[in-house]
Length: 338
Image 1 (cartoon, helix red, strand yellow):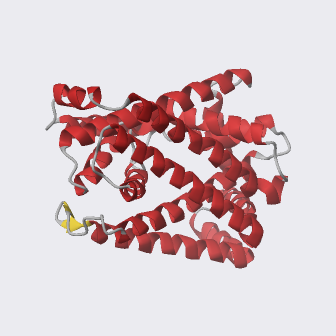
Image 2 (tube, one colour; image 1 turned 180 degrees about the vertical axis):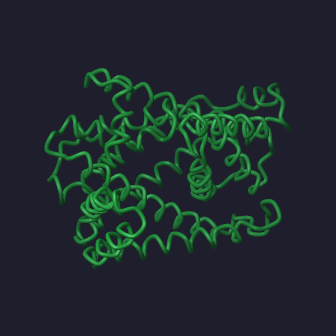
Image 3 (cartoon, one colour; image 1 turned 135 degrees about the horizontal axis):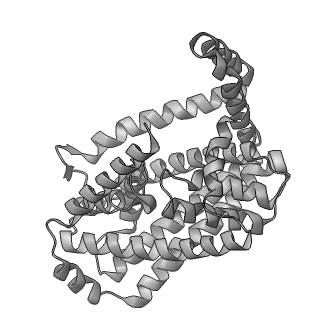
């Protein structure tokens, strides 16, 4: 699908989802809820929502240790901020390319392909921990297990998600224990299907496997897992602080569940910054806990804006300091297949 068509579809979907989010709630009702909320708690919410990015940078240090050694935290943090800023202002999840590209510019010893592969592994750790936390949230006595979402309970939707993640993890194990066999299968397949792409696919797989070196070290694996858990607990705590700011009757476990639902929801094409999917999924998730439309819409809008602004400003600042431009990331997006 051409980028222009894809961007147009993403914008259209975002507009539809924003309309659906607001269709049963007046602006006056949202303002009434927000005007009665706690400003200090919103500020604390913003601080913790932004704190997840230094934690992500610290985890990235461990992920890259087997291929690049212990990189300076500052370079990792600045690249992480730039990547999130790019995701917030450029379509097609540009931050996934901007983050490793910025790091390879700040630390020339780090190849872009290795940094890019580590981002893919980074996301797999996220998926694993987020799903585990969602399942943990369903064990909380406060979880309304019989509350339906559409025609089914939440458990109905979690089962295929868990199955998919299990298959992905099984594939990771195969990459770690038998990479040569994976390469042989890939080479044979591409030789029959698209011979001219065989070297490019092989290079991509080799880069990805290099990012999996962390899985061969129990110590590094435990370190990455620790920072991943801390990252998502911090994010859920930011969610909960937003609940408290609006005086919502949602438990902390609701934050564990809601962040997972939103992480899944924002995977669909949309505008930069995930406006539309974030609001729609957040509204549905809070409805599970009996939160009214006006309160749910107030939370999704308030949290999204407060978590969007600080990291976007920081990333833009670091981008100018590194003498980079947003257009540089267009070339970075093509690099993995080069």
